[in-house]
Image (cartoon, rainbow, N blue to C red; front, side, top):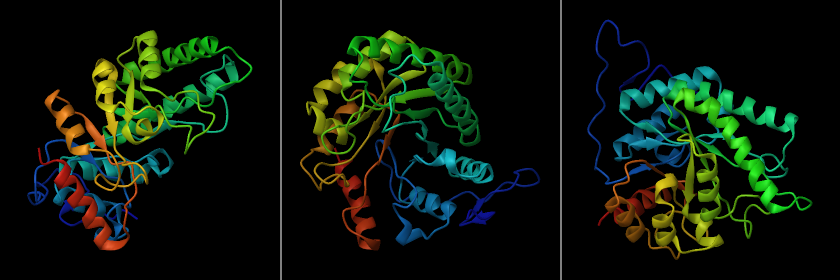
Length: 297
């Protein structure tokens, strides 16, 4: 449960006196790495504001929370207040997804209305936490429908969603996911495919979430694809492979990747969408150490 005042972060109105400013963080990272709730629970406990405060104190300047729309409105609002007090940025939350059924790939009014309802809800959630981005997973492919027709349907459905999001200044980031290990049957799997859809939609509210864990499995070629799709990439996520744990635990050279996107001028959020390789406080400290090492370039 989120409490009213935790670790010096005032949750009430600022009227009548300034809130106590948070202490200076332990370090300053070059990129906006975004942990998620639960990643540092052994250090910070169950309280979400305590966890946010711990992230801030370690030098992290952003948060991502896939489950944010499922949290009570009051909790969403208090997360937003805490982020503002800590001067942290909100990364992605999941606006709409389906890992089992066809959605965006079909031209069906009843499916489209469910998607649009999800996006209207996402706009309201984003307002409570000052979010700029939300994740969209456009469902499964249909083996009975020609691929090009499905692509056209995906573009059309994103255009309709964009009509909602553009007015609110919210950016949908579509996430290509791997089908080899985690998510079989999905329509969107490759960066070039997402790039094509973005160009087809032609909206500032439709961009790419480049999850490097998924793309290492699907196609590799991480840095060249970053360069090729750069104009349509708005957000990155991290996870080493194999294992989907923190950098330095697998085969990927995240120090070089981080150096590359930093040199290209990326100022957005880099989401830490992975597990901890080891449990407890020792494992949590290893995550922090891995980002310190990978950010040293």
